[in-house]
Amino acid sequence: MRDTWPLLRDSDFPPIRRERLDTLQLNLGYLCNLSCIHCHVNAGPRRTELMDRATMELALEVAAHHRVGTLDVTGGSPEMNPDFRWLVTHARAAGLKVMDRLNPTIMEEPGYEWVGEFLAHNQVEAVASLPCYSQANVDEQRGQGVFESSIKALQSLNALGYGQPGSGLVLNLVYNPNGAFLPPGQQQLQADYERLLRENFGIVFNQLFALANMPIQRYGSWLMSKGKFTDYMATLKGAHRPENLRGVMCRSLLSVDYQGYVYDCDFNQMLHLPLDLGDGAGEATASALARPHLRDLLDTPLPRAIRTAEHCYGCTAGQGSSCGGALG
Ligand code: SF4
Ligand code: SF4
Image (cartoon, rainbow, N blue to C red; front, side, top):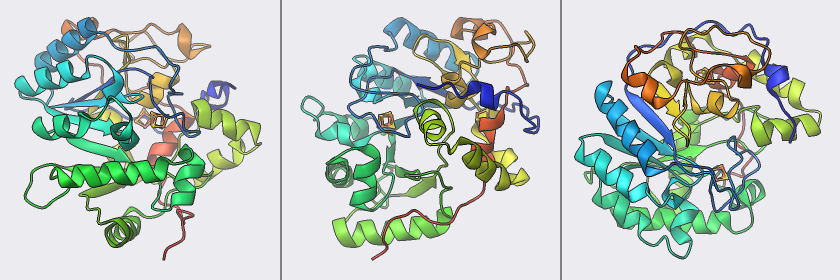
């Protein structure tokens, strides 16, 4: 895989500062039943890196120490970590809200029939990826049969109360484009998703988040191999909206890798660009920088500086024009 960091390092992205920490995002590992082309963590069925229970315990200690309100779990497929249920039940017992970044197809895999009921029982907010409402687009991006199995899983979540008014069980969906273009406007896209998923499959949900693909890891490498990297960066930068700087997640979130090392967000995590605890940025390679660990956060105040580079334009780009799916 090609390394995109040399193309991202020198950047004119505006400086941003951390505010109050309200979310700790844990990457429970890179094991996943899928291996999507746009995946910014290179997850897949053969990855073996998984967060262990000791690191989860430390994460809960850090969450309590910094009075964090939300634990956001991601992966890979977080449910494939053998200690997923331990973590969620202990986080809930500690009063944390828990969000699970769910690839819904996991619910259709043998051995994972427990996922939906477990999430509902623990009132976990489900953030489910469904990159388009069109079967062709989803299968192209994620693999044959992924759309059908995602639809079945979302129907099961609905049957458990997720996305239903008054249930208190939140089901949000995540869209990302299946090509080198920006997501369309979130409001219009949400209206299209609502209408088509309800009419065609009887599915309801709370909110749709439209995210741009990040020019890093597998997707960045794909852009480079197709000669599209420079054009895609120009698209992101051309769509930069300064008002979006206020809402970037790194201002209120810290991202933790499966070994317990800490980053400003999961994109920086994948670029091996660690949290800046004052060791100075700008060294030759991201991997040469000191890596703060969760345990350092028990006796060090959180830094206000956030490490940024060209990929950050993926967070501040405004809406694009089309999902590429047929509206019908
Ligand atoms: S489902 Fe998500 S974590 Fe798994 S490979 Fe696809 S994008 Fe990556
Ligand atoms: S990529 Fe990460 S550090 Fe950069 S703006 Fe987005 S959330 Fe913040």
